[in-house]
Amino acid sequence: MPSVTVTAPAKLNLFLHITGQRSDGYHNLQTVFQLLDYGDELTLSARDDDRIIINAQGASLNDVAPQDNLVVRAAEALRAAENVNKARKKLGADISLTKRVPTGGGLGGGSSDAASTLLALNSLWSLNLSTEALANIGRKLGADVPVFVRGQSAWAEGIGEELTPLELPERWFLVIHPSCHVSTKVIFSHPQLTRDTPAITMAAFFTGPTRNDFENLVRRLADPVDKALIWLEKFGEARMTGSGASVFASFDSEAQANRVQRKVPSEWHSFVARGLNRSPVAAQLEGLSLAKDR
Image (cartoon, rainbow, N blue to C red; front, side, top):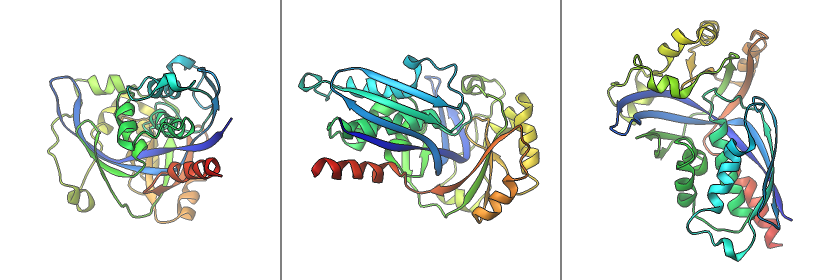
């Protein structure tokens, strides 16, 4: 049976403003998603039955039941999509997931895994669904999934689903996960969360001051995040990504980032990554398409 190996790139929120809360409880925000050349890896093989079988290994997977894994949920959502003719053939898959991105770190690991699963199975199963159709399926799995499906660094508004592709200057990032978990649900519902930051223009992101509206609250609630930011601020502008717990700083070169990483305290997980404007998944799937055509 055909198989393919794809990357699930991590992301950073270069800033994150919460501009209001909607009547349905969701928050309106503005952010920039920066894709990274660091992420999880998935190998997917089509099966000749309708079983979805996952073998997951790596960071932070001990407490995730297979049925709760976003990869499994993405495969099942794709199979259940209205315009997928399941009667035409059996749609099953063996999926091997190697985790490198810490869960609960604000790096989008689960959302990216789900998006890469949708893209890879769309190709493996020869469904030929459009990117927009896959993004719509992904949106039901999580607000960040569509940006990974579309595969470009982007300016985002609304609840994160209104995406405008961005060409960002090449930077290298040192990312630190300070060995703690921050609950997105708890932070979003916290009464002290700032929810009224004035909206800015895309141009203002490149020229004016921005921040992460979650950061001050998380620093008060999670001491390891505060300590990591204090440490990283010695080497440049440090910022938290998403709702935490990971923090990052950018550098002009890989060598600069590596020099600082060598000083990171051993109790923290860290990695150096280059910012990407485009996800590698599309190019990886082109290889599968060429193999099918031969």
